[in-house]
Length: 244
Image (cartoon, rainbow, N blue to C red):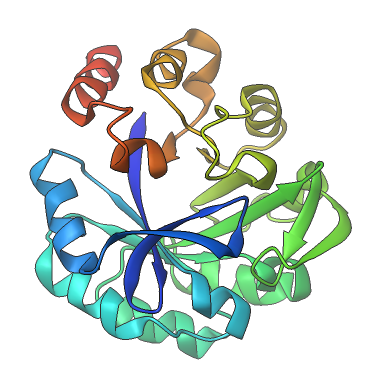
C-alpha cells in the first residue's frame, strides 16, 4: 500500500485547490523541487505530480518545475495534466518520469492510451476523475455521461499500470476518501487502483490498513500532509507494518 504525496503545480508554484477550482488555490511552496525533496526526506517512496495549468491548456505548462523536481529527487515520479499525445508521453518518459498519467485523452482517444501502454509497459496510468459518479475531463471543467467503471473496463488487458481515481466532490476539502466507490472500482477491474481526493486524517490512514482496502495499490494525499493533519512518519510506519 503506497502513500503518494501530491504536488499540484499552478503558475510554477506548489498549490492545493478546493474542489478542483483554479480560483480557490492555496500556495504551499514557491519551490516545487524543494517540496519534493522534503517529501523524499520524510521517507515517501513515490511522488504524484499534476500540472494543473496543463490540464486546462491541453499541453504541458509547468514543465520547467517538473524538470526541476526530476533533477532534485531520486524516488520515482508520476505526472498528469495536459499530456495528450504519444510525443508528449515519450518526451516525459525520456526525461526520467517513472509513469505518465493520461486523463482527458483516456476518454477522447482510448486507442492512444492502449498504444502508449503497449509501447511503454508499466509506465502508463489512467486518471479517472469523477463528479457524481460520471467522468470529468479538461481539467474537470467538463463532465461527461461516461460511468467510471465503464471507462476503467475499456482498458482491461491493455497493459495500463494503474488507475488513479479522484472523487472531485471530496478533493481539497478534507472530507475523507470515498472508500465505497473506490473499493467498488478496484473490485470491478484487474487494473490496480489508487485512491485520490479527500484523504483527511490519520483515520483515513488507519482505514487503508483494513482488509477490504488491500485491493488498492495506494492513496494520494495532498492538503492533509501540508496542513499537518497526517504525520508522515507515523503514516508510513503503519502502512509498512501491514506489508511486513
